[in-house]
Amino acid sequence: MDFHGGLKLPLNHELTIDKPLTLAKPPRKVCVLLSQHSGSPAVASVAKGERVKLFDVIAKAIGAVSCDVHSPVSGVVEAVDEYAHPYYKYSQGIVIAADPPGEESGALSFNEAQRFEIDEIAELAKKCSVIDTVSGNKPLHSKLSGLKPSQVHYFIVSFVQNEPYIHNMETISHNYMDEIISSVSYLGDALSPAFIFLAIPYHMIKLITAIDNKLNKNRAEYKNFKIVRVTDKYPQANELILASSILKTKINPSKILQNHKCLILDASTMFHLYEALKFKKPQIDCHLTVSGYGITKPANVKARIGTYISDIVEQCGGFCGNVNSVIVDGLMSGYSQFTLDVPIIKSNRSITVIPTERLSSSGEEKCMRCKKCVDMCPMGLNPARLNFISRSSAHEKAVEEGIYSCIECGVCSYICPSRINIAHSIILSKKMILEANIRRRKMNEPI
Ligand code: SF4
Ligand code: SF4
Image (cartoon, rainbow, N blue to C red; front, side, top):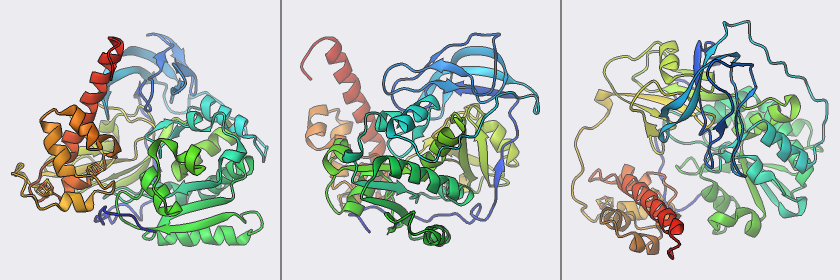
């Protein structure tokens, strides 16, 4: 399975791929951000001085595309204020001084049920605030609520990840394979799709073999499961690209379910959904690949949300040498951090530390019209032209040129021999168009 454009990137997994998944040290203090997903941030429901228990709701969802936020520790609320956010610079957050390890309360009980109705699954996903990391980190319940079995013909579970230094999906899948396959079965039983495709890239050979062995042990139970090997090219993990390469058709971005009867979730989301279904456990942790040649002890870390990046860096032996940047969630589509006092959120996948000597310091040069960006854009856009239009703030023209189809993968910036940060100008322009539309809507002007 392949797609147009994209890039085969060096995976650089050698630092971490054979290391076990380790638990981050229990944090002494957490900062739980209220923007844990895309959509509306939650609103704090606790105040300074209040005692909270592990899993307590500390912020309430606002609207349909929003989730409650649960406390990842037991402790006392120290402050509710604005704090650094790994994606948006700042967000409201709740700082909690955690109880010493061993004094945590918050019990979970096992649910024996082996079948769940789809409404029940959506409700538990909502109650436990599970995030759908394949669809722009939206709350999972917003995808599942109101879904009817007849609406899903294809159910694709993505194990795909092919950005340098990141393999947390593979780590989760090896560590929790039974849980992931069980929750795929629960959702499969509830929706009865004709096909359940497990999309795994070629380079994850060990995972393909392990899952294949598991399915072969009980073919009757997994009769509609099929492993689909997909290319190792980036950005194969993108929901649209994955769906179109598996279903071999052009996909309408906003209508994957309606037009193509295709539901896509990823292995990480399926694991957190399993914990919600079987233990009613709120999603309070994430799995990170902490890597790069600027960190002393690269590791695979399971950490509570709200843990500061500085604590994780310290646990991994600190920096080695001069560090140029600390990037959260990937060199291609992630975010360079301006401080280490930034807490992790549910959707985080990686922390990559890049030493100074690994980066070229030269700046942008003039476009030489080589068209490499055009050839490689997986969405068939003309990135050079979009870059020019975006930098001239010609918003209407940018929309005509298809700026909304850009999936912000960064392939164009990576491939550009003139080192032009094309993706950055496009993302900025999209943001400006969105803000202008909101302003016009408020003033009742036509968009
Ligand atoms: S960032 Fe946008 S324009 Fe650039 S390659 Fe990706 S989809 Fe194309
Ligand atoms: S890759 Fe860079 S230099 Fe080549 S056409 Fe695109 S923007 Fe211009």
